[in-house]
Length: 449
Ligand code: UDX
Image (spheres, rainbow, N blue to C red):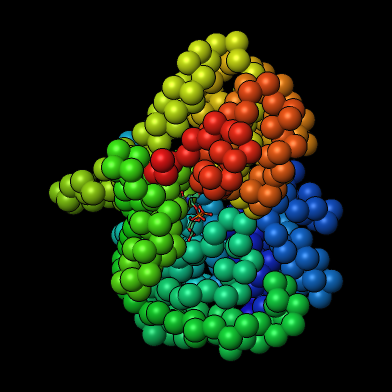
């Protein structure tokens, strides 16, 4: 099928490339001419595993193209995937102006009926408003627009895997024919008729992907409810960690045992510095905001957000307690990205930690396998190193902020010899307290005495 993708940010890039690799003809557009130029020159503007290869394969097959001409892209596709940003506004609600702008463009440029697919994360009722806007902006012309909500559940770092191996594909529609067209679009994924860029050989057997058809409002709610619940799980584990510190428990063992109960599930119970990234923090706020507009006080999410914000204070509390005086100390920070396997530092806890250390007069040396270039722009006074061992050299403390494998496998015997003081404060519970103690380290982490 001929598909258009409007917005080549993270979601649009992955969606466009993977749909092309799945066999569709895809034309992508973005208002950022430099980004389109980079893509047309064969570049990939983000670090995401397997994306470069998927794009190269789709390009070679001539199934993907990039243009700055939004009209051309709109006229190209039978279905148009809206993947523009919906950043948070002051009050936490989602800014939908980019979606509205795209609606005006679609109504103005379309020359045939279109399926308009909402891929951006939006609050419930957006699709209904989008449909109303499209008909208003097309002044009752004879072109019809069928709106679909199709939330994505891609995780940064595993997005290509998540696209080709989804747990579920959620479709919010008004009419069966739209659902049918969406089933056609996702047909290659559902029938496993694609060359998997992740598994070189046959893909491992896995539960069948559920193709879930519901209303537009419910589909939009599913996205916010899912992300908010995952964030809630993390904050719950973090409060349990605080309890473990007070009651001499071990949060890793507690959450492991909890997770053995399939009603709870073991994922997203990892205590530590808390959640960051461009999804959880803003989706929680948008969901709380949405709820308040209909008189629902989402207290439980407000608590999860508060718990998450306090992680930085608790972490710095450990650093201050261990160092006594932070001013003038040389501190190594291992990890800048909001999580491993991405170069994304949006709402990354490490950035807040460093800002606070700098305010207290510390000298900060930092390292991250992928996120240094992006961090240099926001924290120019930090000294960056590619090599984690150079980062900890002469340091009075090493702080672990991101769970990269490179840090998990660090040789602390070697690192300890380079440090001014063998002190590690671990914000991601990467190491065994016993092993670190045996190596002669003062070692602090979350929820493990
Ligand atoms: C998330 C959702 O997982 C994805 O489905 C959605 O489409 C977009 O938002 P992402 O933001 O890429 O994806 O990151 P995710 O892997 O979910 O991690 C979010 C944050 O939670 C990270 O900061 C991570 O470090 C933290 N986290 C995750 C924990 O602190 N503990 C955990 O157990 C899991």
